[in-house]
Length: 504
RNA sequence: UCCUCGAUAGCUCAGCCGGUUAGAGCGAGCGGCUGUUAACCGCUAGGUCGUUGGUUCGAGUCCAACUCGGGGAGCCA
Image (cartoon, rainbow, N blue to C red; front, side, top):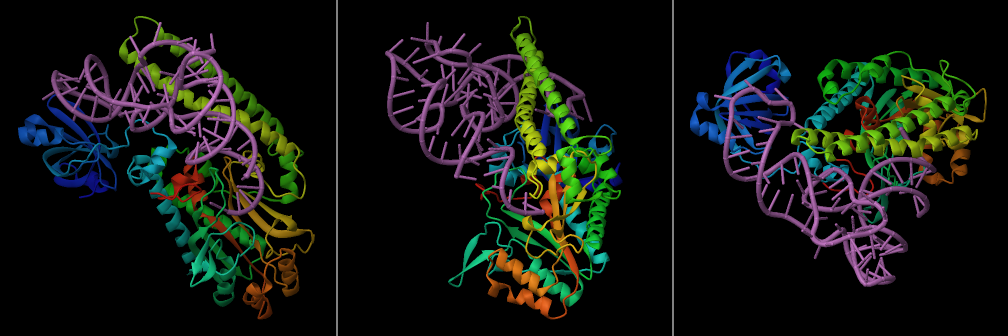
């Protein structure tokens, strides 16, 4: 029996197999929290009900020991899942060695070194289950709409866009690169099947060390024949709505476990604001308000707030340190304050980071040069004014990829669209309408100094029945990171690959 | 590549203006406690203070270089 089905088996005797994730002990009674991959359940082993031998076996269990527990399922509203197991027998598969991950908090580097074990903890368990729902609901959306799933090649002979750094590898003696996008292949398939999507790994060899970057990540790239940029935005919105709705429906419990406030997810089920680059620039610079809120003044307020909080935390720490030092304190009280001080110190570190970052954001927002692409801070400045993802379209063509179509109204603009997640999460989708004109495309390829011969097959798509078409790329990890409100993308993927991290 | 912060016990961190024997909590081990939810209480063990060099009577503490890590810029999903 699996823990997820336990509530249905109340007042019955059953056996569950799993790992000891927590243990509390008192005289004559042991509480084991068992996890089996489907959930968590408290199990009670009492000396007088199961006898000396079984009780001693339970007492000797260490963290993450693997066991089979047999007992009566009893309702108890205080417990997670509403039930607990009153064990009558304990069968041990293995008594685990001293487990490195404790219940107290750990540093990022230590946890990443132990990623293979970290994945067992409840927070990671919840995140991976949400990731699973996100993946499933993306497939569900496209399949129900009649899209064909296709797999783009991972080895490529050239840089698709020629912008970012690629991983080079050896392909029978010739240099080959790990794919940074399947889009061009997606376009070819769209000309054969109408509407398609890819779902595969993507590789970028950027030496980025930020909370938004991975060297290996999963990207979803739909491509639709006969769709213009606005229909493209409809697809993006429909897909994201489906994902959010499914996660809210399937993973309520997991969202609660990770402390995700679902209000923003709920509100993201409405229409996403669509604005041009020009409008977005005015908002970033503070020349245009959003619902009466100004980007620059609200940043200044945030800075003041951070400063006040910083001082208050500092004060609090000093007060508590003085209390600990004062005579007559009980040990429990000292421990309580020490815990609190530790928490406050962590908060202080985050606040200090804000105090360093926000002034830079303000400066960069005030001095934003029209015609530039948005930096990470510009995205934050813009999106913190919204409680839904924002779609920005019609970008200066110089800053966007060569294959984007020029706007018919303004030839300085390319019909690209970026979707920026709220709460400072930045770009989760990049896409647009594709250039259909053979000669404009050739011109762009030359402009970007890309090898024309490598793109001949792609140009064939414009020679043989060229049609308006659009598509986009969705970064799976960035979406999961936002949905779960994680501090870093590395928690959104089982085994993250990033600059300086290849193991485990 | 650049900017910035950091490296002290298995883990998370204190360690003030350079001064005598290196501190706490958690974890681990032992003991106590019959309903605990990061349980609680007592005791014990546990340290080449990232590496190399320098300043000094004296360096965990100051300086330099390097290594590794966090955050950010650039680039992007």
